Image (cartoon, rainbow, N blue to C red; front, side, top):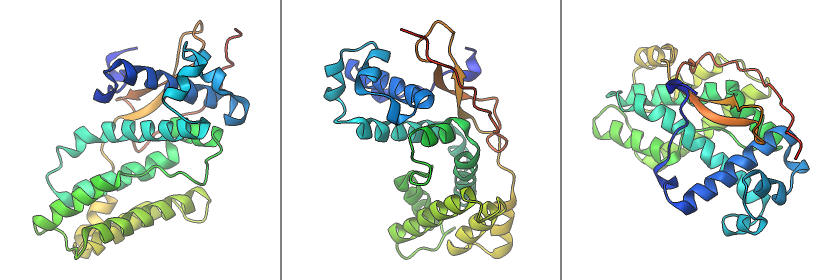
Length: 251
């Protein structure tokens, strides 16, 4: 693994308990990729993580709970990838535009994310999206600086999140073209008070190169055949990865 594909490190995983929980999440995710949620047991997950079966219940009540944890882990990865770039954007309008476009495109194109939600049977129920608090912070910063208009930041954030979720679903279902991404961002920025010409310019600006979570094959002698890493060479607007199924090594 080279420096461009180092896994994202999360500070909350530095404790022994956090590392054990992460092992279960990683094992669960990779087994779901390869066998589907219906074909794995809790024992399969703990064996793949090299842990005792009972240890699972110290962290999760059931398979649904670990699926939710895997989704949250994905959200953390995407947020981590975007955080460094967002920190360089001083204009809140640009920050909102880039963030929305990043999540829109990754929800459609990121093979690691799409493969997981399909394998977990969640295709139409879980949408990749910005953390609501982060969205509220962006709106609040723009409002404070006079860039945005919003009488109620929570309501505004709810409208943006709801719109983004529904547009993503309609694109996935084939009811809207991908051009709806730019149109939606344009409408959001207009709602926040930007002039039409400025909102259109931000919405149509190409997405900068931002790292993305990607699926990397492990060496053949490993029991878990995939690892999620961050590929800093991948262009976030051009990710078109093809799944490469690998059978689990026989025990």
